[in-house]
Image 1 (spheres, rainbow, N blue to C red):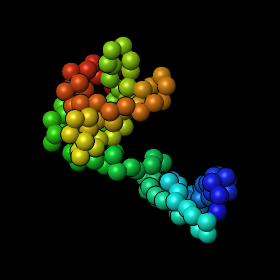
Image 2 (cartoon, rainbow, N blue to C red; image 1 turned 30 degrees about the vertical axis):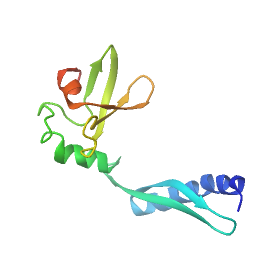
Image 3 (tube, rainbow, N blue to C red; image 1 turned 90 degrees about the horizontal axis):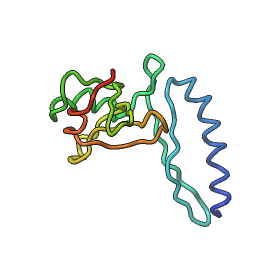
Length: 127
Protein backbone atom coordinates (compact mmCIF):
# COMPACT_ATOMS: atom_id res chain seq x y z
CA UNK A 1 0.00 0.00 0.00
CA UNK A 2 1.09 3.53 -0.62
CA UNK A 3 0.82 6.58 1.63
CA UNK A 4 -1.77 8.27 -0.61
CA UNK A 5 -3.97 5.16 -0.49
CA UNK A 6 -3.73 4.96 3.32
CA UNK A 7 -4.52 8.68 3.72
CA UNK A 8 -7.59 8.22 1.54
CA UNK A 9 -8.85 5.43 3.80
CA UNK A 10 -8.88 7.51 7.01
CA UNK A 11 -11.85 9.82 6.20
CA UNK A 12 -13.92 6.89 4.97
CA UNK A 13 -13.17 4.88 8.11
CA UNK A 14 -13.98 7.86 10.35
CA UNK A 15 -17.27 8.44 8.51
CA UNK A 16 -18.29 4.79 8.86
CA UNK A 17 -17.42 4.81 12.57
CA UNK A 18 -19.66 7.82 13.30
CA UNK A 19 -22.81 5.79 12.63
CA UNK A 20 -21.51 2.80 14.58
CA UNK A 21 -20.47 5.06 17.46
CA UNK A 22 -23.93 6.62 17.64
CA UNK A 23 -25.44 3.14 17.76
CA UNK A 24 -23.08 1.97 20.52
CA UNK A 25 -22.99 5.20 22.55
CA UNK A 26 -19.29 5.83 22.00
CA UNK A 27 -17.09 8.18 19.99
CA UNK A 28 -14.38 6.55 17.93
CA UNK A 29 -11.02 8.22 17.31
CA UNK A 30 -8.85 6.86 14.53
CA UNK A 31 -5.20 7.24 15.47
CA UNK A 32 -1.89 6.73 13.74
CA UNK A 33 -1.49 4.24 10.93
CA UNK A 34 1.33 1.80 10.28
CA UNK A 35 1.53 0.26 6.86
CA UNK A 36 3.73 -1.66 4.48
CA UNK A 37 3.27 -2.93 0.95
CA UNK A 38 0.45 -5.38 1.81
CA UNK A 39 -1.40 -4.17 4.92
CA UNK A 40 -2.27 -1.19 7.09
CA UNK A 41 -3.00 -0.96 10.84
CA UNK A 42 -4.88 1.97 12.37
CA UNK A 43 -4.94 2.68 16.09
CA UNK A 44 -8.56 2.94 17.22
CA UNK A 45 -9.87 4.41 20.46
CA UNK A 46 -13.49 4.26 21.70
CA UNK A 47 -14.55 6.90 24.23
CA UNK A 48 -17.76 6.52 26.23
CA UNK A 49 -20.46 9.18 25.93
CA UNK A 50 -22.28 10.04 29.18
CA UNK A 51 -25.01 12.69 29.31
CA UNK A 52 -24.11 13.79 25.81
CA UNK A 53 -20.43 14.41 26.66
CA UNK A 54 -17.43 12.36 25.57
CA UNK A 55 -15.56 10.88 28.55
CA UNK A 56 -11.78 11.04 28.14
CA UNK A 57 -9.07 9.60 30.39
CA UNK A 58 -7.88 13.17 31.03
CA UNK A 59 -11.31 14.20 32.34
CA UNK A 60 -11.46 11.18 34.63
CA UNK A 61 -7.91 11.87 35.83
CA UNK A 62 -8.93 15.43 36.72
CA UNK A 63 -11.77 14.15 38.88
CA UNK A 64 -9.52 11.57 40.58
CA UNK A 65 -6.15 13.27 40.95
CA UNK A 66 -6.08 17.03 40.36
CA UNK A 67 -6.81 18.02 43.95
CA UNK A 68 -4.53 15.32 45.36
CA UNK A 69 -1.68 16.87 43.37
CA UNK A 70 -2.30 20.31 44.89
CA UNK A 71 -4.84 22.01 42.65
CA UNK A 72 -7.19 24.25 44.65
CA UNK A 73 -10.46 22.50 45.56
CA UNK A 74 -12.45 25.47 44.26
CA UNK A 75 -11.17 24.81 40.71
CA UNK A 76 -13.41 22.47 38.69
CA UNK A 77 -13.25 20.78 35.30
CA UNK A 78 -14.51 23.23 32.67
CA UNK A 79 -13.63 26.33 34.69
CA UNK A 80 -12.10 29.22 32.79
CA UNK A 81 -9.04 31.09 34.00
CA UNK A 82 -6.97 34.01 32.81
CA UNK A 83 -3.19 33.96 32.30
CA UNK A 84 -1.32 36.88 30.70
CA UNK A 85 -4.57 38.34 29.38
CA UNK A 86 -5.66 35.13 27.62
CA UNK A 87 -8.59 32.98 28.75
CA UNK A 88 -8.25 29.19 28.98
CA UNK A 89 -10.72 26.44 29.86
CA UNK A 90 -9.67 23.41 31.91
CA UNK A 91 -10.12 20.19 29.93
CA UNK A 92 -8.28 17.55 31.95
CA UNK A 93 -5.31 16.39 33.98
CA UNK A 94 -2.28 14.20 33.25
CA UNK A 95 -0.80 12.99 36.55
CA UNK A 96 2.25 11.48 34.84
CA UNK A 97 3.22 14.91 33.52
CA UNK A 98 4.95 16.25 36.63
CA UNK A 99 5.76 19.75 35.37
CA UNK A 100 2.64 20.57 33.29
CA UNK A 101 -0.24 18.32 34.38
CA UNK A 102 -3.21 20.69 33.85
CA UNK A 103 -4.65 20.50 30.33
CA UNK A 104 -6.52 23.52 29.00
CA UNK A 105 -7.83 24.98 25.76
CA UNK A 106 -7.33 28.60 24.77
CA UNK A 107 -10.87 29.90 24.37
CA UNK A 108 -10.10 32.31 21.51
CA UNK A 109 -8.32 29.78 19.26
CA UNK A 110 -9.23 26.30 20.52
CA UNK A 111 -5.52 25.40 20.81
CA UNK A 112 -4.47 23.00 23.58
CA UNK A 113 -2.01 24.03 26.30
CA UNK A 114 -0.45 22.48 29.41
CA UNK A 115 0.04 24.38 32.66
CA UNK A 116 1.82 23.85 35.97
CA UNK A 117 -0.47 23.50 38.97
CA UNK A 118 1.00 26.64 40.57
CA UNK A 119 0.09 28.81 37.56
CA UNK A 120 -3.54 27.64 37.58
CA UNK A 121 -3.78 28.06 41.37
CA UNK A 122 -2.57 31.69 41.07
CA UNK A 123 -4.66 32.50 37.98
CA UNK A 124 -7.90 34.44 38.14
CA UNK A 125 -10.72 31.90 37.89
CA UNK A 126 -13.53 33.19 35.71
CA UNK A 127 -15.90 30.30 36.34
